[in-house]
Amino acid sequence: MDLFLQVWGGVFYLVNKMLFSIAQTQPLTTRRRLKILGWGVYIFGVPPWVIILVGQQNWIAASIEFGGIPAMIFGLYVVIKGRVANHLYDKLTSVITYFFIVLGSGYSLYCHHGISSLTQVFEIGVMIGFLLGGYLLAKDNINGWFCFALMNLSMGTLMLIQHKPILAIQQVVSLAFVLFGLIAMIKNHKRHTAHLAP
Image (cartoon, rainbow, N blue to C red; front, top):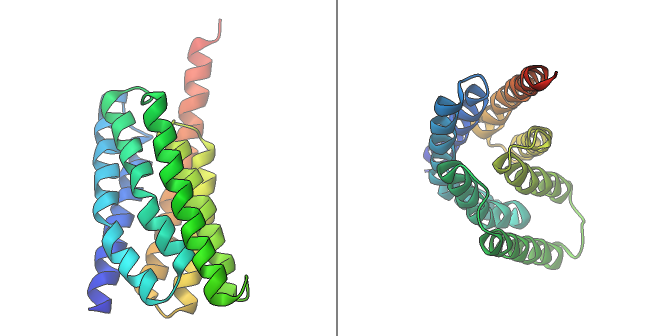
């Protein structure tokens, strides 16, 4: 069962990164379709990750994965509509996300009597990278790629020390796609700026 969950979660998250990074090299219409597919694939990859993280008592990372679903839906909504969601939905997404951050972090601190393990440090890296990265990329902000790189490095290390080799490898491969997406987005911004220049 553990192997099945690793493959399920790893494949869906890897496909998400592939679609997002490839989208950066495509024309606007294709980019939009790939991002819609990417957000949807990501959402279907959440359940096995939550099960694995809870099983390892990685409460911060588990709550982030679960609590990040509204942010993923927000990203999907923004890409489908082609514009930023209304202010109320944006605020609601933030409130739900922060609620889960507090819940997961608080429970982890309670169980471990503070930050007393190396796994918690990596979970904090996952938390920052995942939530901030998803939020920034939903708004087409280039800094989201840097946050995702932090998330991949943190989660990959966490999975390696907890003997989840498939997920550790998946995080390394995902990091390559994150770097590809970052480079492609930088090139797109330069092209766009050069086109607008007088």
